[in-house]
Image 1 (cartoon, rainbow, N blue to C red):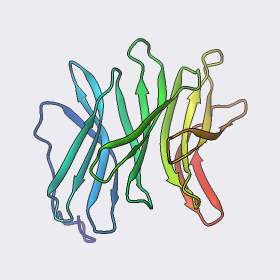
Image 2: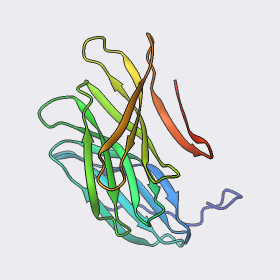
Image 3: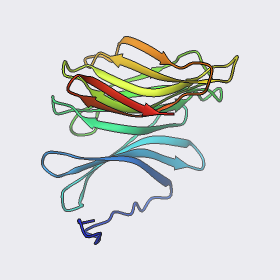
Image 4: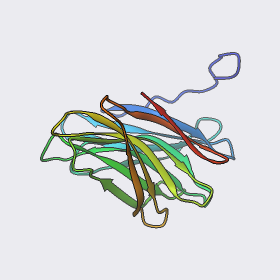
Length: 193
């Protein structure tokens, strides 16, 4: 859409699945990258990444499959020209979910892909940023088996291989979840409830 709300272009995916898009970013060349998940009635859901030209032409599309259901909630463009994305993946043998973080090259190919299991019932990533020194900070939440209580969760990852630098659960006696994160000149700001 333009600034007056008029439709400029649209894309309708003509495949026999339900595609759910959760985040879109505009790149420096005015192209766009969209992420989400593609849901099949027979095999579950796969992470999905699409790149469009500034005029709305589909340049490439990538389905990232796994044994369990997965989806991407957020994606960012990195200073090195690649992308980093965060979401969740459900284990095929249980109803528990883990955080999912991946680094992707400029053509949509996976450089590395990490699942982060907090040994809890539900671990999900909701946002991701790149810090001044190039580390990746992921926001999200975790749900404990024993108390069934949610805490917000912040993690720092090494951009080279995705190893965890540090992780910080955020919570008290109430439920907390982090849904958005943004880089600031002095660090990061995260929001939720």
